Image 1 (cartoon, helix red, strand yellow):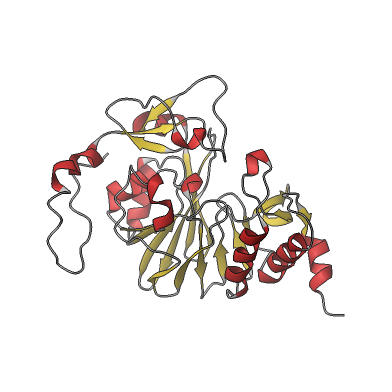
Image 2: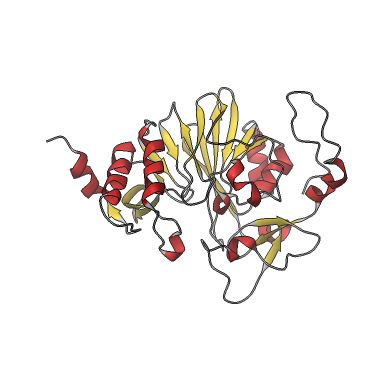
Length: 309
């Protein structure tokens, strides 16, 4: 990891709270990633357990805890990247253990924004990000997709924007721009809190490209021959446990999605180019019409529902 970090950005030029200074060194402790889920913790030694795996939305490793240092993770999990669409880069690890989300780097005329993080970034990947202009803003949908945010913050020192409702999960990070329900950290890039899967779960809407980075609000099964084409869609409270969202959680999802004019829907795992607002709202309306469930629904069936008569 990088050397001692400066205090968080302070646009008001106010003096940093003196209470912060004695504890600033805690963010210079080494970071370790959990092999079972990929959650990073700063600790003076390999952590005794992982709070993410102990949470009801994930599972405890059946063969005991295993944590990797940054260098160990880099050696075990190769990092790859590609430009999926002009100005949008995807970073991922393969092979990888744990949850294994992708990271997205979104280039705009006003700066670059990182959303989500892959389990670990190689030195080559970090240098590639630097060659693209670095990263001025960083955020994530929820803790399952935090991945190696610690590496990005240590290397590029961006504004870190996370919902206050998920602050409890950010102990390894220095949040500089907490928000409640909405934030536009760069022109045209909007963060909207949906809650549901996590209390602070949020989505990122790219207005100019009409892409919704939906986090784990939605889940796709992809065409085995085309990883940009989704065949089914679902929504869930806890995917690995098959727990559905409640009626009120679905209604909040619908309220957020209805105001966003998106034609593509990208999760941290599936950048689906063939699903937009119409199909997502049709899914939610169908789920609201019956008892809660987390079953996948075929996209072609939803398109028949929204097709004009």
